[in-house]
Length: 306
Image (cartoon, rainbow, N blue to C red):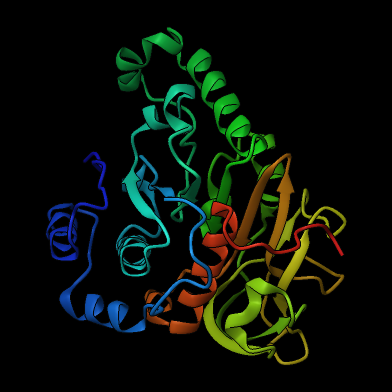
């Protein structure tokens, strides 16, 4: 089922009704109430101008491991957060045409909503309406790849969380753009998280402190490199169960959130976002709103590697 475009003109109740009509959107009234109660009251800074955010859902939702328990909750949280705070207006879609060169520039930033699979690659069904960009899947994909990278390089923002690293694994430049490759999730339990830069503007939600959280925790492989990223949060190996199997990294470097620059653009990634209850955690929602304001271009924060 195609996920149609949503706009700021849809009220929250209407959003719920729309989501409820989708086979994959399993979100209930109690979850909505919890999300709304946890939303920040206002944005950290006033937008410099009206901001438009594309919330990108994978077109391969039927194959998504997060289709029923985090994607719809996160979508609702991000849309409601923009509406409540006025920080941005949201378009939620899986329409590949929005990534084309003449469409993508209407947005200030793109949020990858746990979007997995080769979503930059059009399907055969997409080709008919994508004729202006090529006549084969391969040709259209090359146009969309360039369009996406150029968008960020020229000053657009990119916000990615959790399994967004599971998208477009066939496209090396995409992994370079985000900054790492998914290399398994040894933990799905409560872990310690180290606040690496307590005074960083994007970490204000944590009050300068380390914290604990229960979630599915990733480890990362190349192109992950601290010399190319400004790491904000990492796994605290001293307060985390390091006896779990499938730990591949031997250097103890398990970054969990970072920022980077890509040309004139701003990139944010965080691994937190697997469990449903993450989306009514007020501290995480505040953290993510601040990060969105960073990628949208309103909240200034250092992004060069330390």
